[in-house]
Image (cartoon, rainbow over all chains, first blue to last red; front, side, top):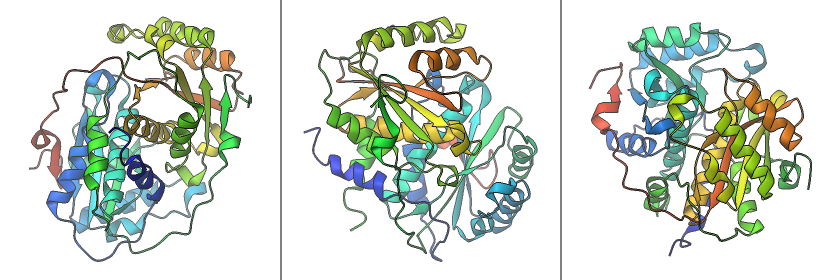
Length: 189
Length: 189
């Protein structure tokens, strides 16, 4: 019984792609809530469930998020401009309460984000992982915090645009399993 | 067509639980490879695909990993002793190549780990998220690096024990959606 439809999960994971172009079509609130419902089933350190999710539809807020991301973008990532954020009907900002995170705020946020992205993909929605902070540049999360009224003891960690895909990415070439799996010790096949 | 079996993904996400007791039953290599195959479909910064996976079955290595985890466990997490690691038939250590990670090594590793845990759950396997590093205590990853011959430019990030569940956790009480979802700004319903 457990094995039934294993392929469905695998298919969802394998078919999910990073989508940065969206059709001009809104996403019902009920669908967004389904995704955030999935997010809170992620594991969290000490079961702290530290998550807060801010659902952004306001165009001006999206524009400012894109502007902040672009301005703080490190030189090697300039090929990924954030302007497309403005074309996503919905942007979810995933935050964590610091006290509830037990020093694992990033991990907790990323695990919830993974559920959002998989749930989105399974529903025919596109998304792409974006960070709301940089270790070496606290000003990015500081600016996002101010824009979204996020309190001082809560940290924004990821920014997830969501929309029905307006692009079909080329197939991605993955590193071979043989190259990345070792047994017992690093380097040992 | 896209909507077909949405419920299967949701079910997998919602039924996954952290499992720390395992039956005395081995996991075929082919199943472990399926999980690591799923892991490499995770998104990664700049598509760097920085992952390396070390599959540990050696009892002595598991014992040492448990000992390292216990010795570096912060006081508030002492209720989660790592001894159970030794009873997992397989432990996967997820590592990332630093250069391929573009300063997002933790995020990249956690996204791959999420796929492993969901794939495991869907196949009736239990797992639990464990960290292989602490920002404030580099010695933990240093000791793991030495034990597993991990090179200096690769960082161990997560430790995932896998086994057929020997426990059925009590249902988890989740924070209400109403408490954690805001619209446009933090605190706004």
